[in-house]
Structures are given as structure tokens and as C-alpha cells.
Image (cartoon, rainbow, N blue to C red; front, side):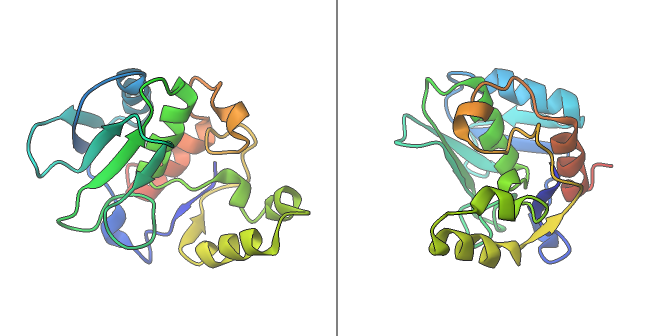
Length: 178
């Protein structure tokens, strides 16, 4: 992984070493949190407080991470606005890892400038336009990573059991954990 939120432009989007969350711990959530914690040297702590950094919602129609504020839709929510991690209770481990990657500030690896042309060749123009526009909010943290849990297609990352070394390095760089 080498692509994620540009914290030079959005320094308040960095997480501290303890990230609090509230909601039900179902499905593969604890396994995914434990994997990221072990790789990053941080802590995810469950709380019942409304002031939690993010909330979990289960059985949504799709898996996604919404920061609760305005763009960019990655990383830490805006001050005073808890984000929401939407997951299906039967989501495979790879999908849960992927969505937590967004929470940590990672973007889709296929959008990485080193691979963008190859991935989007033949795609609708509006898709590519959205990627280029979003790119103004993102930064390159390393080379394109074909092993990233953030790389589409979903059928591939859904089968993954851990983030790549590049994912870990980028999350650390984005959040100042290096």
C-alpha cells in the first residue's frame, strides 16, 4: 500500500495510539482489530461513551467507513463528529480489514497513481474523473502494492487474512506512528 489521506493537508485526521469505538462486537471484528493492533502497535478500545471515535453499525447493505464529517471520507472523523463503520455481520475477515484500513486513512490501492491507468483503462469517464478529483486529497506513501488489502477487486481482498507490509507502513506514516 502506498496511497492514503494527505495529512499534510488534513493534520487533524491523524489518530492517536488509542482508538475508541462503541457498538456490538460481532462477526470478524475482534479478529480484524487484533490483527491491525498487532501490526501497528496501537489499541482499539471498546466503550459505551457517546464520545467514542467511531461507532459500529451491523447488517448494512454494504460495508463502508463514513467519517461523520465532510470530505475526505478516510481517516479520523472531524472533531466532535464520531464516524461510523458499517459492516455486515457475515463479512469475511478481508472485508473487515479493508474497511478498518479506510478508518486508518488508507485509500483504494487501484487509485494509486502508479497503477491508475492500468486499472481504469476502459472504465467510464465519470469513474476516472472522481478518482482524479479525490486524488487531490490523497498522498503517495510508497509504491503501488499489489498485495494490499485495499486493492480491488473485492473478490481478492475478501479472502485476505492480513494487511500487507505496505498497508502497515502507510498507516503508520499517515498517523505518525513511525
